[in-house]
Amino acid sequence: MVFVQVITGGLLLGAIYALFSSGLTLIWGMMNFINFAHGEFVMLGMYVALLVMVWLAGGPAIFGIAAAVALAALGIVIYFSLIRHVIRGPMLAQILSTFGLALLLRYSAFWIFSSNFRSLPPNALSGTINLGGVFLPVAQLVAGVAAIALTIALHLLLTQTTVGSKLLAVAEDRTAAMLMGIRPDRMQALAWGLSAGAAGIAGALMATAYPWSPSVGETFGLIAFVVVALGGFGSVLGSLYAGLIIGLIQAVSAYWLGAIYKDIVVYGLFVALLWFRPQGLMGKA
Amino acid sequence: MKNLAVPHLRLVLLAAALLAYPLVFSSAFYRDVGVTFLLAAISASAWNIVGGYAGQVSVGHSMFFGLGAYTPLLFYTLFGWSPIAGIPVGIVLSVVLAVVIGMPTFRLTGHYFSMATIAVAELIRIFVGTWDFVGAAIGLQGPAVARGWWDLTFRSELPYYYVFLAVLAVVLVTTAIVESRRFGFYLRAIKASERAARSLGVPVRQTKLKALALSAAFTSVAGSLYACKTGFIDPDSGFGILVSVQMVIVAALGGAGMLFGPLLGAAILIPLQTATNTWFGGGGSGLTYILYGGIIVLIARFEPGGLFELWHRIWPQRRSRAHAA
Image (tube, rainbow over all chains, first blue to last red; front, top):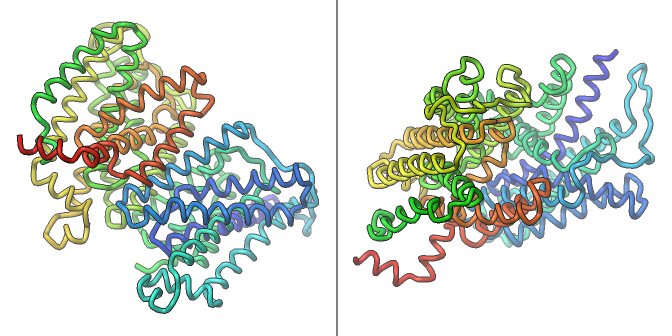
């Protein structure tokens, strides 16, 4: 029974990994661009949830939406003020722009919120639930299920709607999309909004179930790399599967080897992937 | 070639200034700043070979620095050997690691290489932190009192200063030679356009691998020097991400892909860092890193060529005159 609990917990955490990683893979697919500050977006989403709850006494639905909206706005601002200018510049500028942003956000969070671990005050999602002998925190269950639903929603948005087609058109061929009357700049800004918004709401969901400190951004950023590398660059559905797999691997290795080894196993998997299947599980060669 | 066009007079003046610095500013504080400056310049110059000239932006160079820092102290702890004995071992391990990382990632785009370097550095940091053989989270210590000069453990800052200066000279001369050879032209061709370089017959992967290996070897030496001087190393000061950040920012601020870029970057950042640490107290504030992040973003957004390029743009005539001379 303990093992079932470990597996369920891993899958539910993996669902949240899938949600924020789908934001990273979206930007990669759209613009061939890696956002090194993506984990910091997740971390900021957690603090937005905390602030909304403490100051405005908002419930889970309110702080979830607040985190999504706040981070989406931040993503759009960052696109227009920074990314748009470096995207056609040298590789050095592309990588340094979000890498510097990550440092700026991470250490500003240390400065403002201190390095102490935080968790949300008791709320509607506190408590545990008994599912046929498997005890799960309600928050973990709700967060995991919501994350899967949102990742699938993002996938459907990209594949089934006009907006999604426009986004993919810009990704495919910027000039051709422009000739079809699509404004690439707006679409790319939208992609940044969606990507950061997904990270923000993933952060808020995670905050309901797990304690955190400003340093989690670095870990989540790396986990998102691993998920995207496993699922294939640019594939939202791929990152859904890969996120669940990574969550599972982490939970099982923490259970068998001890908690400190769970990240070693995941990053080791990343290095192995680089060697043997650099295009990812679902990616095309 | 343009860097070789720096007039010899300026080069002599620079060398004289660096040689005279610890004699003019003889207080322990200023000498320590000088040593820190040299160390930052050495590691950033080493990073510059692959990150600047070849345009392959590593954000995990701390893995080579950490290897170089750990091996001397590990040999001292295990066998009581002089830390010098560990330096070549660190170099060999770093080159092997460079090949292991470079082989798969250099087939893919530059972003992939950056992701891989950051992940591998983090993997090694966590792993070393759990491995009792290398001191786990506590780290390793060097000789407290030197048994002789070969321990590279001095009471005064002065010997460190000149040893570091000599190593910096070796790194810069090597880079200058690389710059003027065919290899250097290959590197710049790859940076400008990998596809174009390949179509002209440049062995792209091989060249990138060589650049990474050379860069890793020098970074490892920088790590060894750091460990010998500090007499102590732990996972964060060896493999931590901030070690990599410092190399990147020092090189990029001065001018990535320019011979003296890292020197200029270190000359600005190290005094700045010392000042913020003195004013705001210790690294606990993290203010230095907020500042670093801000500077990196500003460089990327407005001046990816660094301050040297800005200088050349503001005073273009000077440069052409220098070329004519």
